[in-house]
Each structure stands twice: as C-alpha cells, then as structure tokens.
Length: 122
Image 1 (cartoon, rainbow, N blue to C red):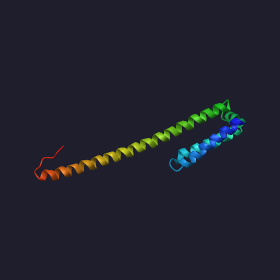
Image 2: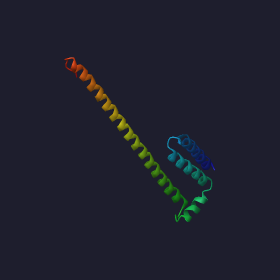
Image 3: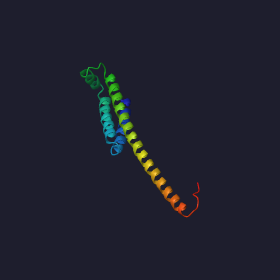
Image 4: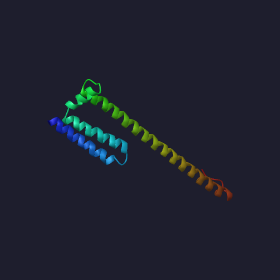
C-alpha cells in the first residue's frame, strides 16, 4: 500500500508537470499524461497488466510495462530531437541574416569613408 501511494504521488506530479508543458509541446505532453494515467491504473490494479500482456501475446505484465516504457521513451526522444533540430535551423537562419546585415552595414561604412579619401581602419 505504501508503494502504491508513493507511485501515485509521483505519477500525479508527472501529470501536473506534463499539463503545464502541454502548450509548448502538445504531443509530448499528451503522451506523458496518457502514460502516467495508464501507469496509475496499473499501480492500483496490477493484475490487469498481466491480463493485458496475455491478451497481447506477452508472458508477464512486467514485460509489457517495460516494452511500453521503451516505446514511449523512444518516441519522446525522437520528438525532442526533431524539435531541437528545427530550433537549430532557425538559429542558423537568424545567425546568417545577422551576419549578412552586419556585413552590409560595414560595407556601407567603408564606402562612405572611402569617398572622403581616408583609408578604412581595421
């Protein structure tokens, strides 16, 4: 009973954290919420994990939970990787735009200085 209460409290904190993050990354947040709710169900009714595992052709409920955990973890890692990659692309475009703008400003300043007969200073 103590373990069930501990795991329920932990899963509740996970659901609350995922709920707060739901607006930023909806797919990850929804997946985490669903997984935590299902985990809470299995914490309180552990015999159903074995029944579901047998129905799916898996020997034990513990194995089923492990397989599902691995799949969810891989899916979340993939989504986070794709989001990070997209952010890196945005940062690259921003850095390139700033570099080109700064180069254009420098070229204009050199052109103005060159028209007055003075050598540009480096």
